[in-house]
Image (cartoon, rainbow, N blue to C red; front, side):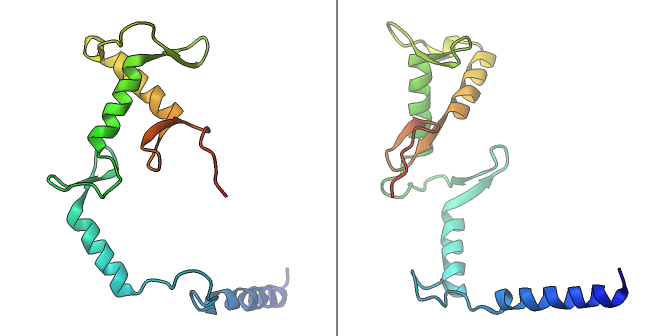
Length: 146
């Protein structure tokens, strides 16, 4: 390729890309107005007052003594719901699905750590927490609303 052609291609690509860079944000008039820097900084400050980063789990956690927002279940309640499911069901490798246990729920503290860890990992791969309904749902079972 000749140097002249490379320069003209570069100039053409720059001309095509420039309008996308110069478009004003939120200029369409559709939807809510964008937040100002001051509003974003204020939201960040409020978030950092109530949350901390947890390295082992790579997630944001509520600080000690802070109540979750209204309508949001605490981490403890989410774990209890998961543990209740694990006590009442077991993973069947042959059927590749969760099978309800007949009779009384099993005592999870009597199982080995490896068993509990393996079932918990399998559970988090097959289920997800739904904030709207406040329960664990099987992955892919959530209905999309228009």
